[in-house]
Length: 125
Length: 392
Image: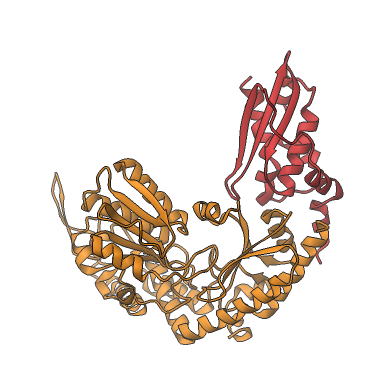
């Protein structure tokens, strides 16, 4: 079979997919935002607790593909304790770097599902 | 069919090992269709029904000949065929025209099958919002929701998710009985099974050219002549009128009044060539081939652990949706793609049907004339690869 497939479904992606971090709704939380992928109908909801300009707690809920779930899992891990200001400056490329695999144009929406929701939250703050 | 048929399609010369299993989305184009479109541009290009010169007249008759061909293909009269840009355009146009012509009002009901494609669902939802109508979703054979309040009944002849060919005779005759108009989506049926609109009895029927070997950008709306005569157009412009004053226009007869603007002439010509190509093979032979392959695909897929199929064993247009427990459809399609197998994953523009099936999405295999058992075997091998990667 074609070799480059392993590049996408690396061990850490699959690990995050099967055992996602920070999964489940937070109650109470300060901000929630949905990320919707129109091509497959997947919806991830991000919950964020902000204290003193910092992300005190963050989680996501919903169903998705390996890329979107792993992305949400990694992003929520990354965002914890970071300042809102710093996250506002986080670019899409940082999300792709975090996933550490080459993402085809067709899967960009999956990779950026949680990222997009987080950006909406931090940019409205 | 099979190997020989595959040779008719130049795409497979450029993608020799491609297992193309996304035919419900769009089919490939045979060389005869590509050549016909190319010849049209080289030899017959002119606008239709406009120029008083030979080239325009020849092009007009080339275009009108296809209208007759389409009519014969689905058992209609020539003037009951309206060319559109595709099935979505057809359904939007039909629904808007009904709204304008039949005084749809608050409290009226619209019955639609839960299997409908978004191209039918959304125009009806928008109509219901504008006129404060009630939408009722039913199984395509269930007539219990159709009453005197019902003004429109919409149903799909073959589902684009499961391939099930619905028997619509009951729902159509009940619609007629209560004075409602019936609209049937034939996008997954025409070019797959014998379709005769007179036998079907629907008031309006539509399909796309590109799902039956024709070019993209052309579709058909059929309507019963007596209905079309009383139906107001919903797209306006040149070519559809006989006279225009400062305050209004006089519309031409059917079908011209529904074809404002320059139609997709080259695409219509290509559609004519596609019909010739399919008829040359024979619709019965096409259906038999797809049926055979559909059965083979079900057998092969069923042997895979943790798989759930969404299809019908009988009366099917060649579509099998499936899910594998624990793996998202997008991930399956991605790995299949990396093995040169093209399938669709997601909600297939049928979100109400996904809800009815209790799933978010699925992977969809859809078959056509050039597919072979080899394509299926390749797909099965790739699915095994998916399971290996996900360790399921």
